[in-house]
Image (cartoon, rainbow, N blue to C red; front, side, top):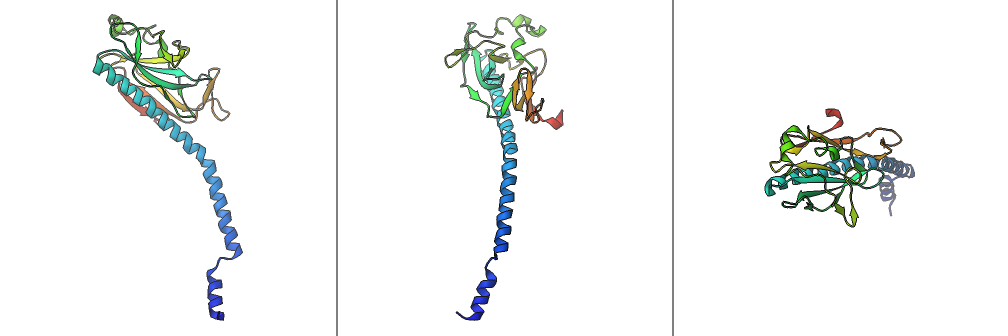
Length: 220
């Protein structure tokens, strides 16, 4: 091999210093990705959790109008007062029992529903004036609700949001439910050592129409 060819190959190769610089850059980028991954996952969990809740609410409203029966979104606790499981029920014919019409769905890990507004008290304890004559279709929370083999108690094991056959929300006012990042213990949110959720998506359910819209922290 001629001297010219050797010089050309040498000039095209990476030096040890250049390789070390490349390895260092890759290491720095890997650390940055690792640090940002939890935030990306949490953001995805909130978006996905809000979609699960919103889809369940829309399905319940659609079924109320399609079947001409009251329907209920049931949100149950899954441990440590973390409300994470959702299913839709409807009133079963002329009886006071509820019939499950959707499978239980889990919110993604890292996202829970804030139960600051407690639908368990609406409207059965404080019935809105325009629903006082609707007792025949606005039945009280069922004592027969089950998740697998477990019987659930309203206000303890589950919350519920009801819709009339015309699609109107059963409540005194609009309902706001937040999907937040973290967990609740003893009535307080614990988020990365703090007491308030850092990230959340709020689902507003309009009383008159039953329709939903999303709000984010910078919008309220």
